[in-house]
Length: 630
Image (cartoon, rainbow, N blue to C red; front, side, top):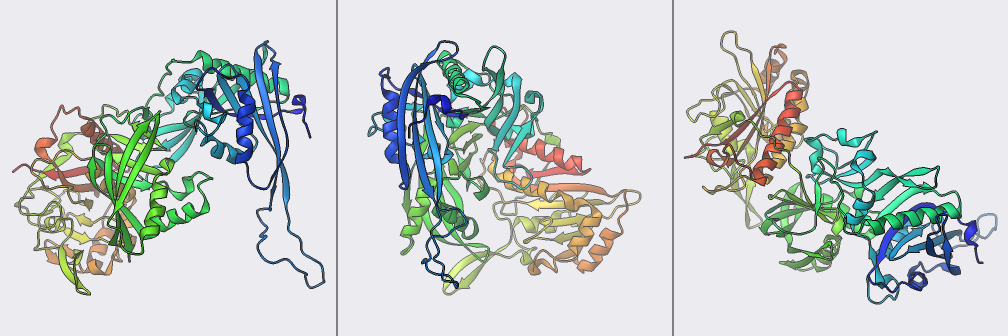
């Protein structure tokens, strides 16, 4: 069945592409011919039709469509069981829906707008652009992101922004969010929103006729543009002609960057020192990745852990570890990941080693997942993030953390890269080092430093003897690693402190500033700030976070009963001061000096200032404990 063009009124949502040469005569037909064998198996074809037509403004465009019908079982129907007769002798049938679909192309000069009534086809066919085996699809490519932005992105007219976080996953900051308003330049928070990049926007106007214009939606990274219902064929082709004309006029142009938000980069220069890696949360995955990869992602989330163990420039090494009873167990593979930048795209090359017998097939599936560049995220000490298949650089504000909020403590008798006491345990003939927080005190871990020197008043002095109440709360569901309550002298107010401890990433005497060493512990401190309220704390601290630390309660250095501490918290009045303390000796006093304008220092200061703002907003003081120089 042939459909007349005048019967068409598609929704204006198109993939934007351009020709790689100037041989465009007949290319619309070639592209449609290439698409036909790429469609699903249970498809019947009705017609392919191509014409050259004029628009309302007398622009000439070449248009063509492919109409096809697809048979599908309803989503609620399972065709796999054997059909037969029911109890009343009636024969059951296989149910099928018949759906009419349209792929429509409009070409103006070297530019093509391609409409898909089935959005899933857009994803699969986009992957074939530029491939040599296709006569038509092989000769077109997506319009570059910068050109789309130059043609349509107007920061002063943004009405809606879809933002994707390039920060590490944290419970106190959204992975993605949508903003809507009359002028979003003024709605962006210069501190908290700088770790977001926009994936899509809506704003700016496209002239439809002399009397009418419409707001434009853009997803520049995927070369997608949408406007809305067209209403009739003449309006659709006139709008597409206008869109393609603006793209042509924007060749070589530059767009204004959105204020505050992270910028997308076009090279791998200056990227170094990967410190964290993650797979995109299952809720944020594209629809077309397949059930097998979805199941793999869920398995990795619950039973495995990735650990960055080395970095060379933008390349890095991952250990894939199996998690058993909440603890890291056997190493399944070591995976070397190399990032490559070619033709405006970032891809990865992988090489795995150290794979145990029987795990080869599983590791190959993991490699397949890691090659899906839209699904992985990598964070670098240089301030860069690889997310959504692109390299981003955060536009860090020039905010400076008050150096006076640092306490420079003497850790000379302690292992700053050991958070909790460790002992060797014999597990079936294998000696393993395991954490034992119940052995806190008399050893050389950071937990022992807190136990032996924290008095809550003369902070960080090596000669301190412990004063007041100190409770270890380490474990699943912890409020903090330690909770401290100072007992005032005279008219001084008591101070309730939540103390979070994190081992240094290195104990080297020349170690520099590290963002990765602070990021997780700062997020933990912000997440648990709600427990600084004395009533909430009293209600939850009566039960220890784990059985091993139940008896780790001291008053003035002497062991006491947990119930006595709970009574002391309940007896606090409204004059009680509140404090959140983060102990991270990776930062050396001499490395954290005024006037440092390095990207790492600016990135760390942004984290510290943001953390302090949240904590102060709840009426608490924020203190960092770093390492004094020898």
